[in-house]
Image 1 (cartoon, chains in turn green, brown):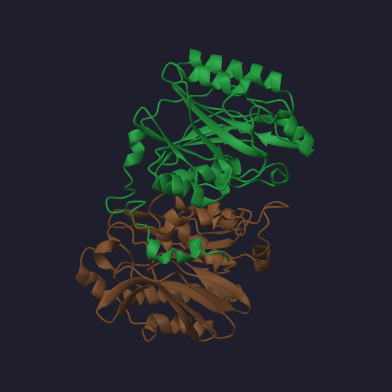
Image 2 (cartoon, chains in turn brown, blue; image 1 turned 135 degrees about the vertical axis):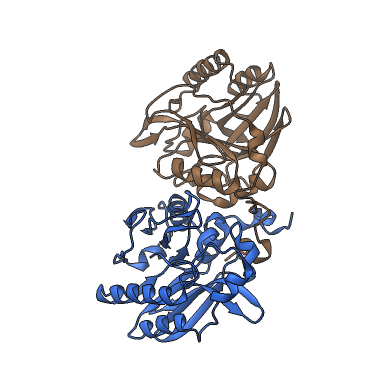
Length: 258
Length: 258
């Protein structure tokens, strides 16, 4: 979709339209982009505060919550106000309940001026006996994040994004292969104050196949039936398990502060 | 290049030819494929023992060592005999000296039948004030390995390979971007006992550009002038450093045995 910078009412209208289209297509798990309630290219802390919303009581959250009734799950990026802080978060609603808030760990470029970084391991949500890992946009650049989600038994990564660098869509293929996991990247389109977002929302399989992909400038719901159990078989060859073959005894350097 | 299974003499001849061609092209750092002295598709432990060689005294090592005189460095994959074990190793010679032996940590498929796995962190070698990280073939599938090399200040990954899966050449682009590092993958070509190797040896920049790439079935020396200092600037944006932005305090799960 294409959120509109600083226009909460319009973003609710556009989100509602996506929810309706998804419902018509019988989508049961829906991923919306990062900062879907607010737009992206802020220029002041005041702007950010004007559009930041509390979870789960804001109107934006309530339309997500309502949609999630009827055995559905939805994740959306939200500019979140919590106590005195603002976060770049993703909220997950399933069956009419708030299931998790993930606060983006890896803030991109100017985001560090507007948001507090999340300080918790990214979460995995259970829904209808399947396991959904959550990360946001620039988290893609840190293989540790997707790896942690896989080690927490996520079968698919739900990945709201507002991508401006050209690397992520291809990198997600590597994330899927190295973790034998699905990934759903929902990336916004359009321009804001000179920033161009790259669209190309996609669903990638554990073998790195692009199962479906939207255009660079396309507002639409793209969906695919996937069998999440495919992600449970971690054998990349008869003898190689992408997680059990790891050698954590050699990885101490990964957890040291430099 | 295309090593010949079980034919040590022929592999020395073919390696010599590559060394001569590289010298003529004024290559100063040369990467040869995995198991360049032995071929790959073994069918018995006896076969492996017949071609395994001791480092650094074997004739294969000696031709590498000799080539490395005159301010050059060479890395080659070798079927290595050490005490009572056999390893899938890479040897590095620079200026006429053995600089390191890396024993492949992540054995692929049937390799587990022939080789002991390496049990040490992959090494970084200094040569003319630059830092060269070493990994072999299937190590590509474990983002932890390239990450460790980057954390050890490698500016480039030297990567001998005998690839049969189709994923690696693309995945190395992600490895380069996520670590802002160069990578040189030297992959053999040809077929052995039904296994097809994918060639496409390549040099990739820290921005994920393919600086040069050989064909799928091409025996050749491909080379490129690269400025290794480019890899020292780890800023992917004005505010994002691909290594310092890591959050090791969230990565404890990466070093736990499951």
